[in-house]
Length: 485
Image 1 (cartoon, helix red, strand yellow):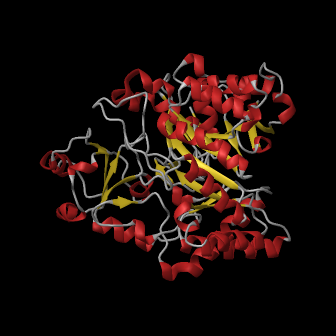
Image 2 (cartoon, rainbow, N blue to C red):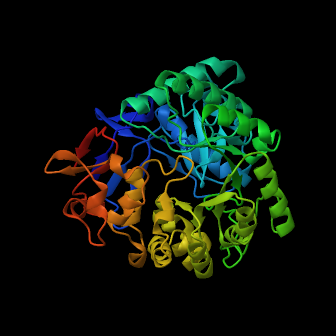
Protein backbone atom coordinates (compact mmCIF):
# COMPACT_ATOMS: atom_id res chain seq x y z
CA UNK A 1 0.00 0.00 0.00
CA UNK A 2 1.22 3.49 -0.83
CA UNK A 3 0.71 6.03 1.91
CA UNK A 4 1.13 9.79 1.92
CA UNK A 5 1.44 11.19 5.42
CA UNK A 6 1.08 14.82 6.44
CA UNK A 7 1.76 16.14 9.91
CA UNK A 8 -0.71 18.32 11.75
CA UNK A 9 0.17 22.02 11.69
CA UNK A 10 0.13 22.11 15.47
CA UNK A 11 2.57 19.25 15.81
CA UNK A 12 -0.12 17.56 17.87
CA UNK A 13 1.00 14.08 18.84
CA UNK A 14 -2.36 13.40 20.48
CA UNK A 15 -3.86 13.19 17.00
CA UNK A 16 -1.33 10.62 15.81
CA UNK A 17 -1.06 6.87 16.04
CA UNK A 18 2.20 4.98 15.96
CA UNK A 19 2.29 2.10 13.50
CA UNK A 20 5.57 0.23 13.21
CA UNK A 21 7.46 3.25 14.46
CA UNK A 22 5.79 5.61 11.98
CA UNK A 23 3.42 8.32 13.15
CA UNK A 24 0.18 8.16 11.20
CA UNK A 25 -2.66 10.63 11.58
CA UNK A 26 -6.07 9.12 12.12
CA UNK A 27 -8.00 10.86 9.31
CA UNK A 28 -7.49 9.01 6.05
CA UNK A 29 -8.71 9.38 2.49
CA UNK A 30 -8.70 6.37 0.20
CA UNK A 31 -8.87 7.22 -3.50
CA UNK A 32 -11.82 5.60 -5.32
CA UNK A 33 -9.82 4.95 -8.47
CA UNK A 34 -6.63 3.76 -6.86
CA UNK A 35 -7.65 2.18 -3.55
CA UNK A 36 -4.08 1.09 -2.93
CA UNK A 37 -3.25 4.73 -2.20
CA UNK A 38 -4.09 6.04 1.24
CA UNK A 39 -3.81 9.77 1.82
CA UNK A 40 -3.47 10.57 5.50
CA UNK A 41 -4.39 14.19 5.95
CA UNK A 42 -3.52 17.00 8.28
CA UNK A 43 -5.83 16.98 11.26
CA UNK A 44 -6.78 20.56 12.12
CA UNK A 45 -10.49 20.16 12.32
CA UNK A 46 -12.80 22.07 14.66
CA UNK A 47 -15.58 19.72 13.56
CA UNK A 48 -13.86 16.63 14.94
CA UNK A 49 -15.47 13.39 13.85
CA UNK A 50 -16.03 11.15 16.85
CA UNK A 51 -14.66 8.21 14.92
CA UNK A 52 -11.28 9.62 15.97
CA UNK A 53 -11.81 9.39 19.71
CA UNK A 54 -11.40 5.64 20.15
CA UNK A 55 -8.44 5.73 17.81
CA UNK A 56 -6.70 8.04 20.26
CA UNK A 57 -6.91 5.16 22.70
CA UNK A 58 -5.35 2.57 20.43
CA UNK A 59 -8.14 0.79 18.54
CA UNK A 60 -6.78 0.15 15.06
CA UNK A 61 -8.76 -2.69 13.46
CA UNK A 62 -12.50 -1.92 13.39
CA UNK A 63 -15.36 -4.36 13.64
CA UNK A 64 -17.77 -3.91 10.70
CA UNK A 65 -21.44 -4.13 11.73
CA UNK A 66 -22.89 -3.65 8.23
CA UNK A 67 -25.78 -1.59 9.66
CA UNK A 68 -27.47 -4.57 11.23
CA UNK A 69 -30.12 -3.72 13.83
CA UNK A 70 -30.00 -7.15 15.48
CA UNK A 71 -28.68 -6.43 18.99
CA UNK A 72 -27.66 -10.04 19.59
CA UNK A 73 -25.72 -10.15 16.31
CA UNK A 74 -23.90 -6.92 17.17
CA UNK A 75 -22.90 -8.13 20.61
CA UNK A 76 -21.74 -11.45 19.17
CA UNK A 77 -19.47 -9.67 16.68
CA UNK A 78 -18.01 -7.55 19.47
CA UNK A 79 -17.37 -10.63 21.63
CA UNK A 80 -15.38 -12.21 18.81
CA UNK A 81 -12.93 -9.28 18.80
CA UNK A 82 -9.72 -10.80 20.14
CA UNK A 83 -7.40 -9.17 22.64
CA UNK A 84 -8.07 -6.85 25.52
CA UNK A 85 -7.60 -3.48 23.78
CA UNK A 86 -10.25 -0.96 22.72
CA UNK A 87 -12.99 -1.95 20.28
CA UNK A 88 -14.28 0.38 17.60
CA UNK A 89 -17.15 -0.76 15.40
CA UNK A 90 -18.23 1.03 12.21
CA UNK A 91 -21.61 1.12 10.42
CA UNK A 92 -23.57 0.96 13.66
CA UNK A 93 -27.30 1.58 13.23
CA UNK A 94 -28.62 3.86 15.98
CA UNK A 95 -32.02 2.18 15.80
CA UNK A 96 -30.37 -0.99 17.12
CA UNK A 97 -30.86 0.65 20.50
CA UNK A 98 -27.71 -0.44 22.35
CA UNK A 99 -26.76 1.57 25.42
CA UNK A 100 -23.61 2.06 27.46
CA UNK A 101 -24.98 -0.53 29.89
CA UNK A 102 -25.04 -3.15 27.12
CA UNK A 103 -21.31 -2.62 26.62
CA UNK A 104 -20.26 -3.06 30.25
CA UNK A 105 -19.73 -6.82 29.86
CA UNK A 106 -16.61 -6.27 27.73
CA UNK A 107 -14.51 -4.50 30.36
CA UNK A 108 -12.90 -2.63 27.46
CA UNK A 109 -13.26 0.73 25.75
CA UNK A 110 -16.04 0.25 23.18
CA UNK A 111 -17.24 2.82 20.64
CA UNK A 112 -19.98 2.05 18.11
CA UNK A 113 -19.86 4.62 15.30
CA UNK A 114 -22.80 5.21 12.98
CA UNK A 115 -22.42 5.71 9.22
CA UNK A 116 -22.35 9.50 9.53
CA UNK A 117 -19.22 9.31 11.74
CA UNK A 118 -20.94 11.96 13.89
CA UNK A 119 -22.71 9.87 16.49
CA UNK A 120 -22.88 6.50 18.11
CA UNK A 121 -22.73 4.79 21.48
CA UNK A 122 -19.72 4.54 23.79
CA UNK A 123 -19.07 2.43 26.86
CA UNK A 124 -18.99 4.20 30.22
CA UNK A 125 -15.32 3.30 30.51
CA UNK A 126 -14.51 5.17 27.29
CA UNK A 127 -16.72 8.11 28.24
CA UNK A 128 -14.82 8.46 31.49
CA UNK A 129 -11.49 8.49 29.65
CA UNK A 130 -12.71 11.11 27.19
CA UNK A 131 -14.01 13.26 30.04
CA UNK A 132 -10.60 13.10 31.70
CA UNK A 133 -9.07 14.51 28.51
CA UNK A 134 -11.51 17.43 28.31
CA UNK A 135 -10.16 20.42 26.44
CA UNK A 136 -7.76 18.37 24.33
CA UNK A 137 -9.57 19.08 21.10
CA UNK A 138 -10.42 22.24 19.17
CA UNK A 139 -11.58 25.15 21.25
CA UNK A 140 -14.42 26.40 19.07
CA UNK A 141 -17.08 24.01 20.32
CA UNK A 142 -17.34 22.87 23.92
CA UNK A 143 -20.22 21.08 25.57
CA UNK A 144 -20.31 18.40 28.22
CA UNK A 145 -24.06 18.16 27.59
CA UNK A 146 -23.38 16.44 24.28
CA UNK A 147 -22.46 13.26 26.18
CA UNK A 148 -25.12 10.78 27.23
CA UNK A 149 -24.93 7.09 27.97
CA UNK A 150 -27.49 6.03 25.42
CA UNK A 151 -26.99 8.32 22.45
CA UNK A 152 -23.65 10.07 22.30
CA UNK A 153 -22.96 13.05 20.07
CA UNK A 154 -19.23 13.56 20.41
CA UNK A 155 -18.66 15.74 17.35
CA UNK A 156 -18.17 18.66 19.71
CA UNK A 157 -14.98 18.97 21.71
CA UNK A 158 -15.53 18.17 25.35
CA UNK A 159 -15.25 20.88 27.97
CA UNK A 160 -16.71 20.68 31.46
CA UNK A 161 -17.93 23.94 32.96
CA UNK A 162 -15.31 23.88 35.70
CA UNK A 163 -12.51 23.55 33.12
CA UNK A 164 -13.17 27.00 31.64
CA UNK A 165 -9.81 28.48 32.64
CA UNK A 166 -7.92 25.49 31.27
CA UNK A 167 -9.93 25.80 28.07
CA UNK A 168 -8.97 29.46 27.70
CA UNK A 169 -5.29 28.64 28.19
CA UNK A 170 -5.46 25.90 25.56
CA UNK A 171 -7.31 28.16 23.14
CA UNK A 172 -4.67 30.88 23.55
CA UNK A 173 -1.91 28.33 23.03
CA UNK A 174 -3.63 27.08 19.88
CA UNK A 175 -3.96 30.59 18.42
CA UNK A 176 -0.36 31.46 19.17
CA UNK A 177 0.86 28.23 17.56
CA UNK A 178 -0.98 29.11 14.36
CA UNK A 179 0.38 32.64 14.38
CA UNK A 180 3.92 31.42 15.02
CA UNK A 181 3.67 29.44 11.79
CA UNK A 182 2.87 32.55 9.82
CA UNK A 183 -0.92 32.60 9.89
CA UNK A 184 -2.19 36.18 10.05
CA UNK A 185 -5.90 35.61 9.37
CA UNK A 186 -7.60 32.55 10.80
CA UNK A 187 -10.60 30.82 9.29
CA UNK A 188 -14.08 31.53 10.56
CA UNK A 189 -14.81 29.94 13.91
CA UNK A 190 -18.09 28.37 14.97
CA UNK A 191 -19.19 28.53 18.60
CA UNK A 192 -22.02 26.23 19.60
CA UNK A 193 -22.53 26.84 23.33
CA UNK A 194 -22.47 29.69 25.82
CA UNK A 195 -19.48 28.13 27.56
CA UNK A 196 -17.70 27.92 24.23
CA UNK A 197 -18.48 31.58 23.57
CA UNK A 198 -17.02 32.64 26.92
CA UNK A 199 -13.84 30.67 26.23
CA UNK A 200 -13.55 31.98 22.69
CA UNK A 201 -14.14 35.56 23.81
CA UNK A 202 -11.55 35.46 26.60
CA UNK A 203 -8.90 33.75 24.45
CA UNK A 204 -9.44 36.11 21.50
CA UNK A 205 -9.15 39.15 23.75
CA UNK A 206 -5.93 37.91 25.31
CA UNK A 207 -4.32 37.18 21.94
CA UNK A 208 -5.50 40.48 20.46
CA UNK A 209 -4.05 42.44 23.39
CA UNK A 210 -0.71 40.69 23.04
CA UNK A 211 -0.47 40.99 19.24
CA UNK A 212 -2.00 44.42 18.81
CA UNK A 213 -4.37 43.12 16.13
CA UNK A 214 -7.23 40.62 15.79
CA UNK A 215 -6.18 37.43 13.96
CA UNK A 216 -9.70 35.93 13.77
CA UNK A 217 -11.40 36.67 10.46
CA UNK A 218 -14.94 36.23 11.76
CA UNK A 219 -16.97 34.15 14.18
CA UNK A 220 -20.34 32.47 13.88
CA UNK A 221 -22.65 31.47 16.71
CA UNK A 222 -25.35 28.85 16.42
CA UNK A 223 -28.92 30.08 16.06
CA UNK A 224 -29.80 28.46 19.39
CA UNK A 225 -27.30 30.66 21.23
CA UNK A 226 -27.98 33.78 19.22
CA UNK A 227 -31.73 33.75 19.74
CA UNK A 228 -31.38 34.00 23.53
CA UNK A 229 -29.72 37.41 23.44
CA UNK A 230 -29.04 38.59 19.87
CA UNK A 231 -27.51 41.97 20.54
CA UNK A 232 -25.25 40.71 23.34
CA UNK A 233 -23.20 38.54 21.02
CA UNK A 234 -23.00 41.17 18.30
CA UNK A 235 -21.78 43.79 20.79
CA UNK A 236 -19.22 41.46 22.37
CA UNK A 237 -17.89 40.39 18.97
CA UNK A 238 -17.66 44.06 17.99
CA UNK A 239 -15.59 44.80 21.08
CA UNK A 240 -13.15 42.12 19.92
CA UNK A 241 -13.08 43.53 16.39
CA UNK A 242 -14.60 40.36 14.92
CA UNK A 243 -17.58 40.37 12.53
CA UNK A 244 -20.34 38.16 13.89
CA UNK A 245 -22.54 35.81 11.91
CA UNK A 246 -25.25 33.28 12.69
CA UNK A 247 -25.02 29.65 11.66
CA UNK A 248 -28.07 27.61 10.63
CA UNK A 249 -28.60 23.95 9.98
CA UNK A 250 -31.32 23.51 7.33
CA UNK A 251 -31.10 19.75 6.94
CA UNK A 252 -29.97 16.43 8.23
CA UNK A 253 -26.83 14.78 6.93
CA UNK A 254 -26.09 12.42 4.08
CA UNK A 255 -24.18 10.08 6.32
CA UNK A 256 -27.06 9.80 8.77
CA UNK A 257 -29.48 9.43 5.83
CA UNK A 258 -31.58 12.37 6.96
CA UNK A 259 -30.82 14.98 4.29
CA UNK A 260 -34.13 16.32 2.97
CA UNK A 261 -34.61 15.23 -0.62
CA UNK A 262 -37.44 16.41 -2.83
CA UNK A 263 -36.33 15.14 -6.22
CA UNK A 264 -34.43 12.12 -4.90
CA UNK A 265 -35.30 9.25 -2.59
CA UNK A 266 -33.33 6.91 -0.36
CA UNK A 267 -33.43 3.23 -1.21
CA UNK A 268 -36.23 2.71 1.32
CA UNK A 269 -38.31 5.40 -0.41
CA UNK A 270 -37.98 7.99 2.36
CA UNK A 271 -37.35 11.65 1.64
CA UNK A 272 -35.32 12.46 4.74
CA UNK A 273 -36.12 15.25 7.16
CA UNK A 274 -35.89 19.02 7.07
CA UNK A 275 -34.48 20.89 10.05
CA UNK A 276 -35.07 24.64 10.09
CA UNK A 277 -34.58 26.81 13.20
CA UNK A 278 -37.14 29.19 11.67
CA UNK A 279 -39.68 28.02 9.12
CA UNK A 280 -38.64 30.29 6.27
CA UNK A 281 -40.76 28.38 3.80
CA UNK A 282 -43.06 31.25 4.74
CA UNK A 283 -41.27 34.16 3.08
CA UNK A 284 -42.75 36.56 5.63
CA UNK A 285 -40.95 34.63 8.36
CA UNK A 286 -37.70 34.88 6.39
CA UNK A 287 -38.10 38.66 6.11
CA UNK A 288 -38.89 39.02 9.81
CA UNK A 289 -35.85 36.97 10.81
CA UNK A 290 -33.63 38.95 8.45
CA UNK A 291 -34.76 42.22 10.05
CA UNK A 292 -34.09 40.81 13.51
CA UNK A 293 -30.54 40.06 12.43
CA UNK A 294 -30.18 43.56 11.04
CA UNK A 295 -31.50 45.29 14.17
CA UNK A 296 -29.12 43.16 16.25
CA UNK A 297 -26.17 44.47 14.27
CA UNK A 298 -25.52 41.16 12.51
CA UNK A 299 -24.93 41.09 8.78
CA UNK A 300 -23.97 37.49 8.03
CA UNK A 301 -25.87 34.21 7.86
CA UNK A 302 -24.25 30.88 6.95
CA UNK A 303 -26.50 27.92 6.33
CA UNK A 304 -25.55 24.25 6.25
CA UNK A 305 -27.65 22.99 3.33
CA UNK A 306 -27.55 19.39 2.13
CA UNK A 307 -30.28 18.05 -0.13
CA UNK A 308 -32.30 19.76 -2.82
CA UNK A 309 -35.22 20.57 -0.49
CA UNK A 310 -33.10 22.53 2.01
CA UNK A 311 -31.16 24.18 -0.83
CA UNK A 312 -34.36 25.21 -2.60
CA UNK A 313 -35.87 26.75 0.54
CA UNK A 314 -32.69 28.75 1.20
CA UNK A 315 -32.43 29.96 -2.39
CA UNK A 316 -36.02 31.23 -2.21
CA UNK A 317 -35.24 33.12 0.99
CA UNK A 318 -31.97 34.70 -0.13
CA UNK A 319 -33.64 37.81 -1.70
CA UNK A 320 -35.38 38.54 1.62
CA UNK A 321 -32.11 38.40 3.51
CA UNK A 322 -30.30 40.48 0.94
CA UNK A 323 -33.03 43.11 1.01
CA UNK A 324 -32.34 43.45 4.74
CA UNK A 325 -28.61 43.83 4.08
CA UNK A 326 -27.70 40.34 5.28
CA UNK A 327 -24.95 38.45 3.44
CA UNK A 328 -25.93 34.79 3.01
CA UNK A 329 -23.64 31.89 2.20
CA UNK A 330 -24.50 28.21 1.85
CA UNK A 331 -22.28 25.40 3.11
CA UNK A 332 -22.00 21.92 1.60
CA UNK A 333 -24.53 22.59 -1.22
CA UNK A 334 -24.72 18.84 -1.84
CA UNK A 335 -27.29 17.10 -4.05
CA UNK A 336 -28.55 20.26 -5.80
CA UNK A 337 -30.65 20.11 -8.96
CA UNK A 338 -29.28 21.63 -12.15
CA UNK A 339 -31.82 24.43 -11.84
CA UNK A 340 -30.60 25.21 -8.33
CA UNK A 341 -27.00 25.35 -9.53
CA UNK A 342 -27.95 27.87 -12.20
CA UNK A 343 -29.98 29.94 -9.75
CA UNK A 344 -27.16 30.08 -7.19
CA UNK A 345 -24.65 31.02 -9.91
CA UNK A 346 -26.90 33.77 -11.26
CA UNK A 347 -27.21 35.16 -7.72
CA UNK A 348 -23.45 34.97 -7.22
CA UNK A 349 -24.29 33.24 -3.95
CA UNK A 350 -21.13 32.39 -1.95
CA UNK A 351 -20.72 28.63 -1.50
CA UNK A 352 -18.44 26.83 0.91
CA UNK A 353 -18.06 23.29 -0.40
CA UNK A 354 -16.67 20.07 1.04
CA UNK A 355 -15.10 18.14 -1.85
CA UNK A 356 -14.14 15.34 0.54
CA UNK A 357 -17.69 14.01 0.44
CA UNK A 358 -17.68 13.64 -3.34
CA UNK A 359 -15.34 10.68 -3.03
CA UNK A 360 -17.82 8.83 -0.83
CA UNK A 361 -20.27 8.13 -3.64
CA UNK A 362 -19.63 4.45 -2.98
CA UNK A 363 -20.98 4.93 0.55
CA UNK A 364 -24.15 6.73 -0.51
CA UNK A 365 -24.92 4.84 -3.73
CA UNK A 366 -26.79 2.00 -1.95
CA UNK A 367 -29.16 4.62 -0.51
CA UNK A 368 -29.48 7.08 -3.38
CA UNK A 369 -28.61 5.06 -6.46
CA UNK A 370 -27.67 7.18 -9.48
CA UNK A 371 -28.48 10.38 -7.57
CA UNK A 372 -25.41 9.82 -5.37
CA UNK A 373 -23.23 11.07 -8.21
CA UNK A 374 -24.69 14.55 -7.67
CA UNK A 375 -23.37 14.87 -4.13
CA UNK A 376 -20.70 17.36 -5.17
CA UNK A 377 -20.98 18.38 -8.85
CA UNK A 378 -17.76 20.42 -8.62
CA UNK A 379 -16.99 21.04 -12.28
CA UNK A 380 -20.62 21.82 -13.09
CA UNK A 381 -20.71 24.35 -10.26
CA UNK A 382 -17.44 25.98 -11.29
CA UNK A 383 -18.55 26.24 -14.91
CA UNK A 384 -21.93 27.75 -13.99
CA UNK A 385 -20.33 30.31 -11.67
CA UNK A 386 -17.63 31.11 -14.22
CA UNK A 387 -20.26 31.93 -16.87
CA UNK A 388 -21.74 34.43 -14.43
CA UNK A 389 -18.38 35.95 -13.53
CA UNK A 390 -18.69 34.65 -9.97
CA UNK A 391 -16.19 31.79 -9.82
CA UNK A 392 -14.38 33.48 -6.93
CA UNK A 393 -17.52 32.99 -4.79
CA UNK A 394 -16.77 29.28 -4.42
CA UNK A 395 -14.46 28.14 -1.64
CA UNK A 396 -13.58 24.75 -0.16
CA UNK A 397 -13.98 24.22 3.54
CA UNK A 398 -16.83 24.99 5.94
CA UNK A 399 -16.86 25.39 9.73
CA UNK A 400 -13.42 23.84 9.97
CA UNK A 401 -13.94 21.20 7.31
CA UNK A 402 -12.57 19.49 5.35
CA UNK A 403 -9.90 18.18 7.70
CA UNK A 404 -7.29 19.89 5.57
CA UNK A 405 -6.99 21.65 2.26
CA UNK A 406 -4.87 18.72 1.11
CA UNK A 407 -7.89 16.50 1.48
CA UNK A 408 -10.09 18.95 -0.42
CA UNK A 409 -7.58 19.19 -3.27
CA UNK A 410 -7.13 15.44 -3.49
CA UNK A 411 -10.87 14.81 -3.55
CA UNK A 412 -11.55 17.49 -6.14
CA UNK A 413 -8.86 16.15 -8.46
CA UNK A 414 -10.03 12.57 -7.88
CA UNK A 415 -13.77 13.11 -8.24
CA UNK A 416 -15.35 9.71 -9.01
CA UNK A 417 -17.09 11.18 -12.07
CA UNK A 418 -14.68 12.17 -14.81
CA UNK A 419 -16.89 15.06 -15.93
CA UNK A 420 -16.84 16.56 -12.43
CA UNK A 421 -13.08 16.38 -11.86
CA UNK A 422 -11.28 19.68 -11.47
CA UNK A 423 -7.66 20.47 -12.18
CA UNK A 424 -5.13 20.85 -9.42
CA UNK A 425 -4.93 24.54 -10.34
CA UNK A 426 -8.68 24.97 -9.89
CA UNK A 427 -8.54 23.06 -6.62
CA UNK A 428 -5.81 25.30 -5.23
CA UNK A 429 -7.53 28.48 -6.39
CA UNK A 430 -10.68 27.57 -4.51
CA UNK A 431 -8.92 26.45 -1.34
CA UNK A 432 -8.64 28.77 1.60
CA UNK A 433 -5.30 30.53 1.93
CA UNK A 434 -3.77 29.37 -1.40
CA UNK A 435 -0.58 31.24 -0.57
CA UNK A 436 -0.01 28.85 2.31
CA UNK A 437 -0.01 25.72 0.15
CA UNK A 438 3.38 24.19 -0.46
CA UNK A 439 4.43 22.03 -3.41
CA UNK A 440 7.04 19.30 -3.21
CA UNK A 441 9.16 19.77 -6.32
CA UNK A 442 12.42 17.97 -6.95
CA UNK A 443 12.43 16.91 -3.30
CA UNK A 444 12.29 20.52 -2.07
CA UNK A 445 9.33 22.49 -0.82
CA UNK A 446 8.36 25.63 -2.70
CA UNK A 447 5.54 28.05 -2.02
CA UNK A 448 2.85 27.76 -4.66
CA UNK A 449 2.25 31.32 -5.82
CA UNK A 450 -1.23 32.46 -6.87
CA UNK A 451 -0.06 34.03 -10.19
CA UNK A 452 1.09 30.64 -11.47
CA UNK A 453 -2.49 29.38 -11.26
CA UNK A 454 -4.32 32.12 -13.16
CA UNK A 455 -4.31 30.38 -16.52
CA UNK A 456 -6.84 27.72 -17.41
CA UNK A 457 -4.05 25.31 -18.19
CA UNK A 458 -2.13 23.99 -15.22
CA UNK A 459 1.22 25.54 -14.42
CA UNK A 460 4.37 23.45 -14.46
CA UNK A 461 4.38 23.26 -10.65
CA UNK A 462 0.71 22.45 -10.37
CA UNK A 463 0.65 19.87 -13.14
CA UNK A 464 3.28 17.89 -11.29
CA UNK A 465 1.06 17.68 -8.23
CA UNK A 466 -1.27 14.98 -9.49
CA UNK A 467 -2.24 13.48 -6.19
CA UNK A 468 -3.97 10.45 -7.70
CA UNK A 469 -0.63 9.40 -9.19
CA UNK A 470 1.12 9.81 -5.85
CA UNK A 471 3.85 11.86 -7.52
CA UNK A 472 3.90 15.03 -5.47
CA UNK A 473 2.55 16.02 -2.10
CA UNK A 474 0.63 19.29 -1.84
CA UNK A 475 0.02 20.40 1.73
CA UNK A 476 -1.36 23.39 3.52
CA UNK A 477 1.25 25.04 5.72
CA UNK A 478 4.70 23.53 6.10
CA UNK A 479 4.77 20.62 8.52
CA UNK A 480 5.41 17.60 6.34
CA UNK A 481 6.25 14.56 8.39
CA UNK A 482 7.37 12.12 5.72
CA UNK A 483 6.24 10.33 2.59
CA UNK A 484 6.01 6.55 2.43
CA UNK A 485 5.80 4.74 -0.92
